[in-house]
Image (cartoon, rainbow, N blue to C red; front, side, top):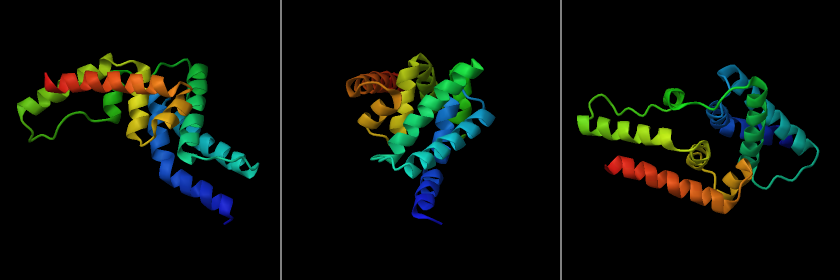
Length: 164
């Protein structure tokens, strides 16, 4: 196995599940998200083979996934996941033994999640995957200050819902 093969294999093993889930949040069906995720890593291999210098591999992968996901979604004419579908990806319910107060709190957070814009949800998701503000900005094609604003507003809304 060449060093290039090792580098792409390592990136694939580290990021594939995160990229797949991100593509689902963009509205791709599971089979298309799986195909798109594979396409992302194929493009990574081809870019590295051409000698392209990639400073932040994870940021690059998510940027390509974002663009590819939007392209595929446009071809499929699908919409991003709604809150009900997002619940399938992230179980917002507390464990069965948690009290009624905790369940109510989570219900309020889930309701607040529905009120976030698609951009706010995308920024939160990418931040939860460990991307830095500049990486999120690059992945979504927006400014760092816009990322900061989206995250600040989204977090404030979710915190308010959690403490009501």
